[in-house]
Length: 106
Length: 122
Image (tube, rainbow over all chains, first blue to last red; front, side, top):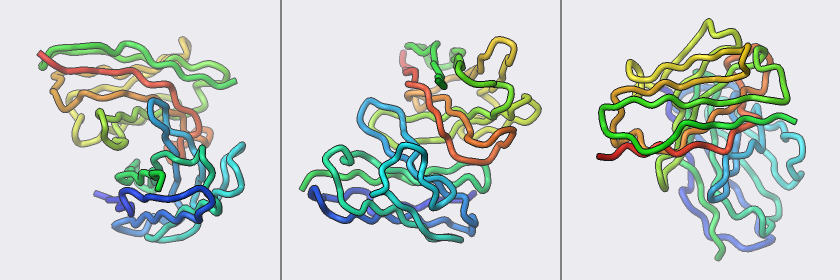
C-alpha cells in the first residue's frame, strides 16, 4: 500500500511566519499530490492540486512544490485565518491522506 | 453553484446497517467520479470508497471492503454508501467529495459536502 508521511504533526507559529510542511510518499507518485486545509467543524478545502497548481480563490501566499516522493506546502507569510490543519493526499494510486499538520498559535 | 449534501447519519448499534446519501446539485453529476472520505472524532482523514462517473468502477479501502457498498443514481443526482456490519471504529463524520477532473477517477477533491456523523454504539 502507498503510504504518505507528513511532517511535522504540529507546528507552533506566529502571524507573518514562513511555514513549510512536508509530505513524503512511500513510492514515486509523479506529481499526483494535493493539499487541503481543514478548520474545526468544517469540511476540508482544496488548496493545491497536482503538486503546484493553486486552486481558484486560494491566496497566492500558498504554494506547493516537489515531485516523485518528496513534496512541500509553503505559506509565505502566515495570516490569522491560516491556523488550521493541513493534509496532503496522493491521487496516483486510489487515495491516501497524510496524517495532518496542525498549525498552532505560538 | 456546486453543492454536495450528505444525509442519513445517526446512531446505530454494532452489527447493524445504515445508508448514507449524497445529493448533488449545480453540476452534471454523471460527468464526475465521487469519493467518500471519513474522519473519526479528533482524527485525520481516511479515504473510504470511490465510484466512477458512470458507476462502472468502484474501489474500497481495505477497512470497509466487503461491508460497504458505494452506488449512484445519476438520474436522481444522488450517491449512496450502504454500510453493513458496522463496528465502533466506523464512527466518524462521512464526507462525499467530487473529483476535479471530468470522467476521471484520479485527481483532487474540489468540492466537499458538509459531512454526516455516524456513531456506532450500543
